[in-house]
Image (tube, rainbow, N blue to C red):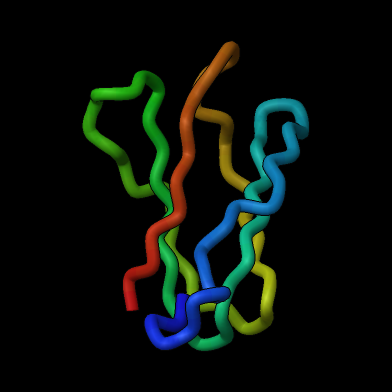
Length: 79
């Protein structure tokens, strides 16, 4: 997520489902802040589930699943 580095990009690395929870893993930059959002149906407004500041090259967060059958997550760089 460095605008001066073409190889730097926000990438979700994995999504692990653990019962009623989803664990999202993404490539991050230390000291950057991220907002994690979810939605049950595409086209609906995104809902902020959490935010955090990364302290390593990979970040992860455990969240309640959006729905039993499907749901969508996204990670947004906030600073």
